[in-house]
Length: 439
Image (cartoon, rainbow, N blue to C red; front, side, top):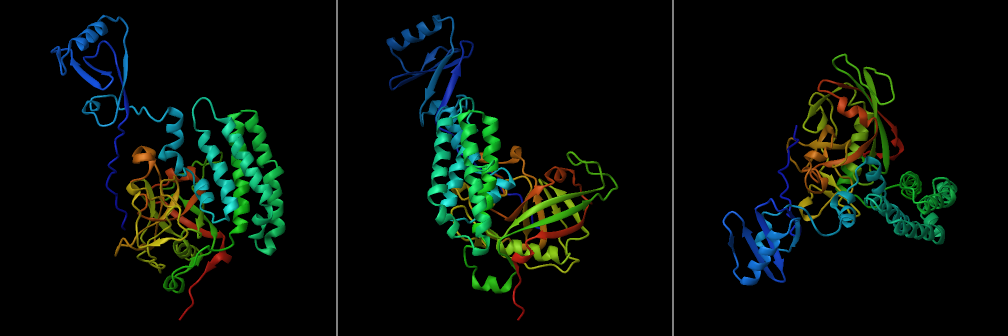
């Protein structure tokens, strides 16, 4: 098994900070125009002399109530002892533009963002996704901005209706027309979302936004019946591929006779987990996995719990699948990279991030990290407390992620070493699995 831990990030340190001091503390920093003075009250030494500054210090000592709050700027050597609190941007902007806000935190959001829909639908989606970031701003919500976003999405949906429906296959147009109408006027549509924003009810906005984005995703999936790019010829002929999405249902059985405790369900010695595998962003990896599932290769497979992951046996005693090259689609790109990892430190993030609880990925091949294991996969148990800058996993961009757990996430932490996959079934997506031609 090849499942290495990556080295820690070396987070950059914010330069702009705020220092808060009280009269009881010994060290004070005072800024007057371009002059900075540091006073150590134990030794009563000043690093810069001058009668004016001495008088300032004398007056400050006579003040009964401090604190002094001083902003330190850029590269001054004096910032080292200051409290590490970011002063700029403001609290609202810090929440909105933090790297943490732009990384999907659920499998549903990650899968929705990965759909290769046309430009108009993506513009609607991006405009609505921004509202979810705006809702994270504490205290006063920018409802005016949210309203503007929804009106913009409505205008695109109405004005570009013909363009949106034109990219949908003929046999799906009737269904797409109904979904499009629901997006505008339906119970989970844009008009309903707009009304909840006008009422300034954050909880209602959140619920209606989720419903509207689900409708957007449904329409986008109708626009994406297959891959939006051509695979390299040597890979297309050599490996299975999944031209779209599939759903796999796992039945997990306790190996020690104990029981699972599903939320809202009765305790049993078996539990079900469903995952959606994504061929839009990882067609070869998802295709190999789908074929293994259809062949029954994972039935009876033992599971092991390691650091932040539930991983399958390596399958050395089974008729395993294909050793697919490492396959990662970077954000903003239209096709995957092969045999290449991403550099998160340089701002590269994958379309399907690992930093999501329940992410599904292939382990590395034992022969080379440029290839995925032909058989061994793992569920990633993301934990923000063990993540790096912006809540991003230290192993982000190093593995072929090809799906997410969408049902049974509460079962994942209950899995222990020795539990068994009793069965794995491809319950949706068989028609999108393309096998290589036999030579």
